[in-house]
Image (cartoon, rainbow, N blue to C red):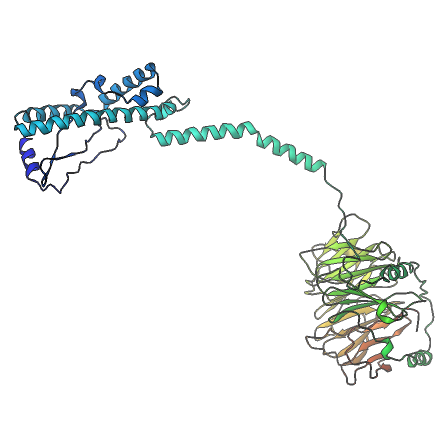
Length: 559
């Protein structure tokens, strides 16, 4: 120890010796305590560092005085208990080896010079102050750990660090807190309440005043006019067809003039329907951007007779007036909604919604318009019953068609309906529809390109007209629904409209079901009417007809 002291005196005063403090490790009974070196100034220019071993065993712990601030905060009993804990802790910390080493070091340092004695006295005074600070720190650490030592349920984890003991205490307290809340029982009660209080499903309604574009003083009168047309016109299916000569004479009396041309909606027209009223000419059109335009051709001036509503967000591909109540108009859109415009209540009521699919067409399975068949663009079909609450389907039917463009129901035998797809035309029986996949009764495979539409004749359903992208209009004999429907006539007609125009759809004239009407790409622009034999009956044109008329409709009774 004397040799090490001499070496320390000769060492560079700028170099400070460092001593490591080993942390407590499990399964070890020895802990090492290091003392910081005290730097003392001997002369003005030279600084010498003296290392003196310090043993707590050579001091009486009673001499370690506590600060007055601590004595003022605590009572005498608490100070006595803390001193007892310090004694036990110090006895555990100081190992036997360190005691013997400290005694040897003290014996070797008994014969220093007078200057060293003076410095040692100063060091002893500073060590006494450090010991008092050490005692206070140990007391404060004992105070911080006293709560954790007395924590119930943690006696088996006495070897853990204070942080781990505190963490386990927090975990147990949190578990007890959540258990006291009884969350599982509350959740079970809420589930039962939700099941008992299921609200009735209501249909979404859009007021006409919220979706009208043209707001005028005549809107209420306009709606009263449409609502007054509530009596359906009687339809005589046994009515004899007029001769071609008289029919042609009536067509010759029709002229397209500037007074009969109306601008109803913005964007291309995707669908059209004529009101069956015999006193007024009321027209409804569905546009590309979700508008439904209503036009009264007998209103003067004509600007006052046009109102545009916006019940949809995507193209309106199909429009029908209800056969049971012509004051209702049903509109179907690509946005997956089917709505009913009720002019008597001034609302658009939601009939059917399917946000996962896009609709293409629909038709009424029942004459009272209570059940509908809806075609989807992905080849599926939906059976919808308007009498049931909610806006869902009754049955979702799969088919072998990759896409469905139009759906049309047989006017007499309403259990049959025809669908036009990509290349095939199928006729189904509504009584034998299967959710997993339905097989058609009849398939028409004469088409070579994409099909735009297929419709039964409006009175008897004895004919079917199809429009195909191969520039042909085909007419089939459907008087007998059997395994085979013969092809009667093929009419050559330019049906190539391109991507920017609405595709042509040949429609039957309800007054003369052996004649069809279709637009034309020929110039000058025209609308043509053909007989089922393929002969052209009439052609509408003139200077006022300047656009391609892809969608056409004829009034069911008026010429």
